[in-house]
Amino acid sequence: MIENIDNSNNLYSSEKGNIRSNLHEALFYHLRNTFRDHIQDLLTRIHSRNKQLDIMRAFGIIAILWGHNYQPPFVFFPVFYALALFFFTSGYFFTPQITIKDKFKYFLKKTRKQLIPYLGLNLFFGLLTMWLRPMGLNLGLDINFETMFIAPFGRGDQFVLYLAAWFLFNLYFISIFAGLVYQKSKKINICIVMFAVILMCVFLLYTYNKPNISMWITFLSRSAFGFAFFSIGYLFHIYEPKIQNFVVKPINVIILYVIFDVLQKNFGDVNYDILFGNVNNKIVIVPILATLCILFIIYIIAFYIKNILSQHSFIYLIGQHTFSIMVWHLTCFLLVNFILYKLLLVTLTDLSSVYFHYNIEKLWVIYQLPAIILPILLIEMYYLIRQKFLSFFKSILNSHFIFATESPPVR
Image (cartoon, rainbow, N blue to C red; front, side, top):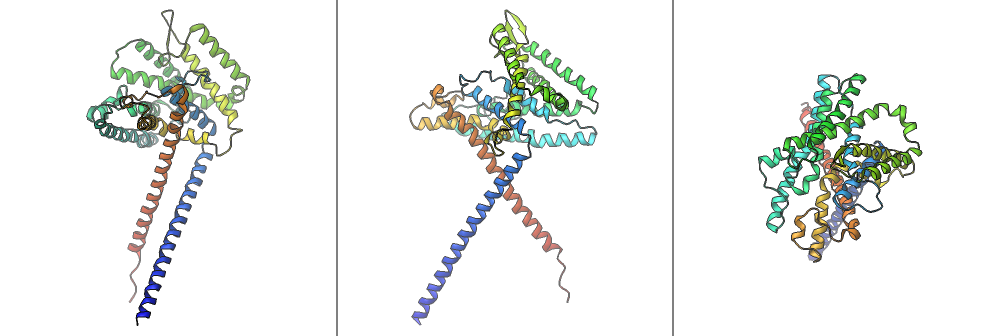
């Protein structure tokens, strides 16, 4: 009798071990297949995008990081061009909506993809700022109605770790305005582009060298600047098939760089406040011309780089995730500084300055790489979790629907 019980216990333990082993194996294969499917989805997204524009965006976001970190001496151009580049590429992909219904759908899409994420992340960084404050880090204002909904219309620096996202907030309103004014007629749209450039100049002339301008003028000035380059990108895309063969000639890189260099040497440093410079007490538009030169240099370089890069190049991944990198890179800088603080290389006070970098001329890479890689990993993990959650939710709904619609058995 006792022997039978022992045999039963051994059999039970063996079966339990087999079940556990099978569960572990099933979990392993499930995770492997999930990861493989996500990688395949990622590669599909890369292949379906405009590779040349992704390369341009990659250049742009790296330049933004240099501007907030350290610009290596081998980089010949000022990083201020990057903001114009992002507005330019956004306009490049813009398509005018003709009917009221299409415009309304476009507004809803932009609200869902740009405004709501901005406001949601604004709340997140507000909470993060409040959480870090008791630790001795002063990285922004309190959470209230003004910092949530009013401050973004000014400098957008209510929370220091989120200050780079002002671009995204302005881009939403630029996209909405473009959706309202652009029409089916190409002639009308060309006039709108000209108006956009004139409007930019008017606002920048009005605000140039004025130390104290109102919050709303700051917002309108940035928006006018962005709308001008957004419109230039849209116009360029219209005529691109006709002029691309001429534009992408390698000799044009040399010509554009010579123009840029001549402007720089004859008018001084072109790294001015956004687009205007003060030369001999006169306002000049050299930075506008320099910005256009750099934009088209990057366009030409990207045209040839896409022909030699691997289809799965990490450069495309950077260009695809500029939104995430723009939002999270300052937090990554803080994370690097926190590690250095734990290593007793920096003080706690240093961490309250988002622009503080330890031994930056030698160690700028240790700031740059995490600021690129970590946001990409974060957003890809978000995509993966969202995909699995939606798949699980749909399977539950389908099961419930099938159960609810099954006919009762006939008696």
